[in-house]
Amino acid sequence: MSAASIPVVRLPAWARKGSPLSPEARPLRVLLRDQQLTTVCEEARCPNLGECFARGTATFMLLGDRCTRRCGYCSVETGRPLPADPDEPARVAEAAARLGLRYVVLTAVARDDLHDGGALQMARAVREVRRRLPAAKVEVLTPDYKGDPLALATVLDAAPDVFNHNIEMAPRLFARLRPQGSYRRSLDLLRGVKDGRPHQVTKSGLMVGLGETDTEVDSVLRDLRAAAVDIVTLGQYLRPTREHAPVDRYVTPEGFRALETRARALGFPTVYSGVFVRSSFNAEEVFHSGPIPG
Image (cartoon, rainbow, N blue to C red; front, side, top):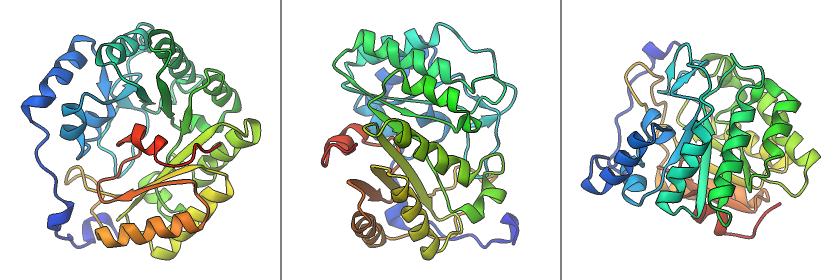
């Protein structure tokens, strides 16, 4: 069935969130523009943007706002990226220091045009943040780097506190929604982190509402746990624009509580499950919410 032929599912009241354009969000927006920085919060049209910006937190997105991949669920622009900016890591660290962050989340667009997929830029940003904020925890949310072990080692050598890579969806859906990605490659990436560094905290996220079945969700959770992933996040897919894949179903808040129970039964030390849960949302609180994994 094509995306166009899937009937539109009405957005329920409990899946609606207020406008991100609150006055409290303005100082952070000004800082980001002043430092010429990009956030995944804005580019991916996150429903939690207003809440996070008002609290003075954001997920910094490295290597610009143009991704070399086109995924059917993501609103980040696809196009020819600009060259990597050597000053970007220092500006990210400056912004994090001005905000007084105790927990810094760094992500990046997929940069298949670069020989290392942008791994060096990520590692430099981790080190710059540590230099400016030595007491802060740093979480990286990375692309798959095409499975390149040298790129992965480059990021891990910078010693992030949490290594996050989102599996996003069931393997059956990759061909339609994430054609330049690979379920097996993402799973192998997460497993490779633990194989090489058993004490590294790992994290991954899964969206529901893209056309998966409950059985497939359970299978993905089993695969992630078999890869020794420590922290798993589960959230509702919300269509960013009419050009993106429609929502197949809305899971109720009770349904997300059931998913959390199931994930905990599989042995995940830390689980964050809910309608508006995103991989980077409340990352500091999630990290400290249970036993420190690893």
